[in-house]
Amino acid sequence: MAVHFTQVAIIGVGLIGGSLGMILRRKGLASRVVGVGRRIENLKTAVELGAIDRYVVDPKDGVKDADLVVLATPVDTYDRHLKEWASCLKPGTIVTDVGSVKGLLVEQAEQAMPPGAHFVGAHPIAGKEKTGVAAGSEQLFTGARCILTPTTRTNRQALERVRAMWEETGSIMLTMDPHLHDKILGAVSHLPHVAAFALINALVDIRAQVPSLDLAGHSGAGLRDTTRIAASSPEMWRDIFLWNRDNLVAFIDTYERSLERLKQLIRAGDAAGIEKELERAKQEREKFPPRPAAPA
Image 1 (cartoon, helix red, strand yellow):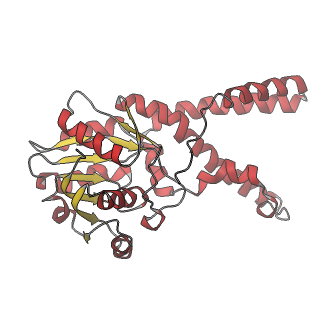
Image 2 (cartoon, helix red, strand yellow):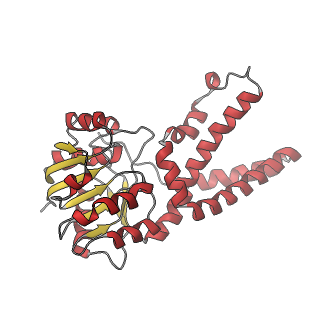
Image 3 (spheres, one colour):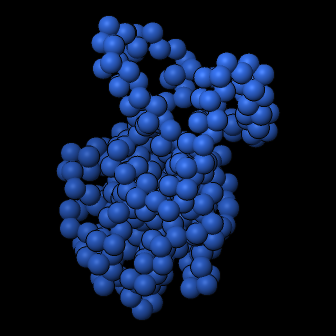
């Protein structure tokens, strides 16, 4: 039997929260979906798009009768949110999230739960550079990975209900230690975003040095593909970078050494060394699994 919730409160009805709400309502996984957010226009749009049944501005009103609460706000807001309304949760309520950082955030969220309420960390890896509920889609999670990050404190029944919900979205489910999650995602997701943001800013600096260069007008698919994720939300990625800073700084150091090695080979005119470095990268890139087919 499919999982079902009487009332789901989604805190932050953006791309991820809105897409989840659309699926919950279309598949009948929740009797009611309540949206909570700061921007009334976005919440009205969420109602029009079928992502939520209704909205409230005060999160206490949204969570008090919920049996599932989904935190879909920037990760730096978690502590403030939980301090504001965790005491309003009824026994048995499950709180989960969609954040790209786990580790310490999971530990803090578990400690914030009142007696009888349960936290289950989750990370659906299905974002895109566009933000807001208007960019949401019922197919957003189809074929995408969703990582659950239970700890020794995680309630098993709550974990299985969250797992069942994400399976209904079409996600491929994985389970991982919260701190291991941050190391892996720091390398394969957070570091690429650092590189994309930094590359665009380097191009801005190059243009400032030589204003006559029409860089954007001559950009091709290579630049667009490499920097697509630089159009992502600065607010969201600021928080991700800060909450995973130790892992990320170490990985940036490694990336800088790789750049420096290639720079020195280019400076020296070492054709054989350059080719060897590029071949090493090419062979590693070809080991990547193919991208899942887009849903029909």
